Length: 199
Image 1 (cartoon, rainbow, N blue to C red):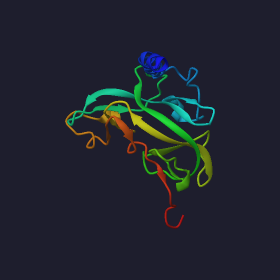
Image 2 (image 1 turned 180 degrees about the vertical axis):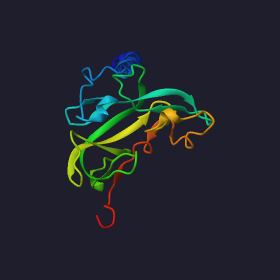
Image 3 (image 1 turned 90 degrees about the vertical axis):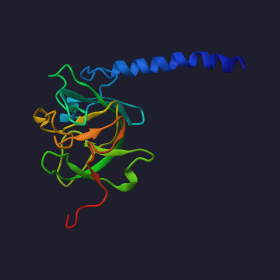
Image 4 (image 1 turned 30 degrees about the vertical axis):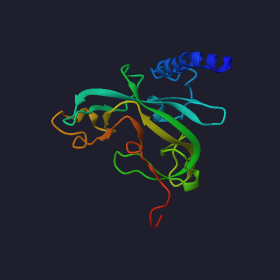
């Protein structure tokens, strides 16, 4: 009984400590330890992640708010180089599992699309974004991570062209994706489990 009481008394302090350390780590610190994992490509300008002993990742994905609020009341946000813009803020927490994916194609300004074996998609979870390590190779399997994103707030994510967003249009009319707090599979979805016909 004494052990249970001691645990109940200590629990709020432990939770507060975890929340405080997560909040501090969420600030952009240009990959300062312990969030010093790097993919070795452009994503490193707006992510900070730590790698666990089992190879999995936990970290943060950053955006910059443009100051525009859409007609449907979403603040417009986009990825930027957070070293150039000190007002980056956390858009998502991310968790990742090691995987490999085959780079299939890229359509316009959307994310590159990867073929991933269905059994390699972690369950349970919502790992809908594959990001590669180092350099990308067309039509070849490359190592990387399947990422699960959890939005920390609501915003309108515009991957390219956020500077053209206007308050008289909705997020969608501005070319964005409405993001609400919680699991997000829409903004960075870039995996398929079957190759396109003729590929």
